[in-house]
Length: 188
Image (cartoon, rainbow, N blue to C red; front, top):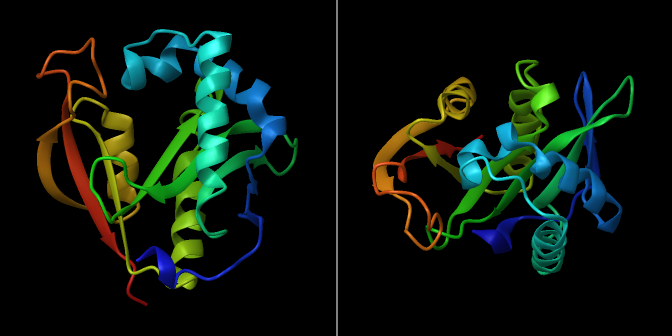
């Protein structure tokens, strides 16, 4: 699936947003986003990320992204009118379901409820569909209602329920690790 995607631009825009491939200059902005306990609630149980851990995760993502083709990867989301960083959207090889491309997003809590995740994700979906990908998946925790709502708005269909591995969320019970997997056909 990944080898069918063609080279495209390092940026894209929507009516209200411009998105740019994340590079090293975004380390500080992503740290402050991940420092917010509200943002981290469904990622690690609301534990703010310390600066060392954030730098390590960011460096790993940056190195990993360099091995992918240019269509997919992490893209910073900015408001077009102000230029303010609001979060990121990503399509990447899925780490739980081999051979699948996964859509994800994370926004600063101040940006929630404005439709930015849906708008940026829709543009990212269009980007990978135009480049030749035929399908995306997404997954989230059962209890993450906002993310489930976004996936439904984007047209994703529920595939099945599953439990995230304990290794991925080591401090969480099996009940807390329950998730839902969705997919979206990109046939044009």
